[in-house]
Length: 449
Image (tube, rainbow, N blue to C red; front, side, top):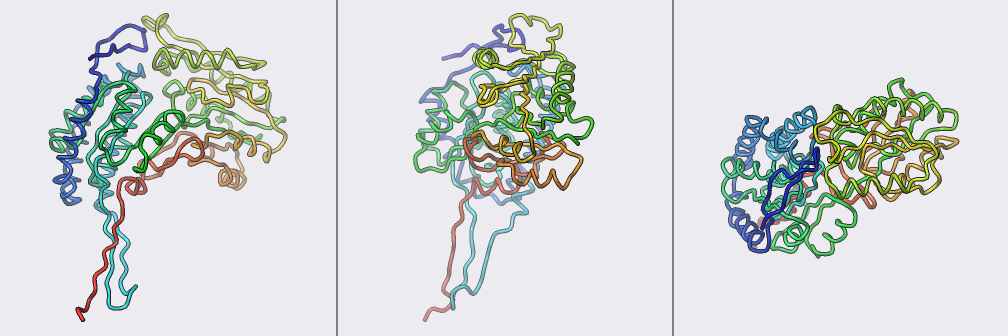
């Protein structure tokens, strides 16, 4: 069974990909299960060596990986090049992290006994990743899972299997047979994987799909990253380049990032200035030159529906540059929506496109309340020259990640995760290893009598 792949830049067919069904999913999970004993028995150093080999393969073939990402997502090379470098860095980071991890151990807690804690892998991890960052989101999940001693079966999004199929081929050489498997396909494929004999599910996607995954997974461990609707509080003393920085972050990957700024909230005294400056900054971001298209027809239709339903009093739109086949591709210009009524769909829904809304409040306290008023709670930012005030607001924002005078700044060492309808669990940092391991307490009696 095959699916037709579409180039989001032109809307034209660009090839086909396999659609995995029960035999393929069962076979991949079985292969991962068979590889688990040998992989988990390796010392952290031995696993690290193999993960380092995979990172080196990614770097050596970076141009090929970048081409695969561009084919499926339409991103410009300036974005994919940096993302491929991050993927290699993640595998290297977790190769080192698992070797430096210390375990809690205590003696003398019970008289005449000695105790310690072993951290053991969970088993076979089923990973389902979205189309906005096909390879990078897979690395966020796979790198810590593999470093912790698990084997992995990954289901890429239906529209973007290219880079993960390439990764699977390189992983077989670098890690060993069966350690990292890929099952391309559609939503049915994902459901088959979740319901298969995997020991844990790591899912990145929409809240509705996340609830479905949690229900199907039952009592097995589930890690969920379910999107965001990030507020950016812009105070009157915000740094001069604030609006330009927000425009860049809002249009990176055409705004198709769960942590991208989406809702700009500012004070009445600053409102007209922010609307004007954001409109100018977003108008300078040209689709086809500075960022790519939306990923697929369904996403484009969803974006258009939200924009059409919005009752914004003012709309500022940028342009789409001269792109071959653009008239049939999923290109959308950068937009700013202002003078919005309460509960406007462009504010309450995750738009997932190159769009910023601007809302007006009287005080910083009202801005904080408005920022925390939506169910999504993944990322946020505060913009002010008063760092004490900015840090105070950041500490009270209900989000897993908060930035001050920047947005979308991330590194392997710092954790990322959501709250509320944005899910639960931790990606990145040493803390992500805990997602894919479980503790076992071992206690021994020191005297036989």
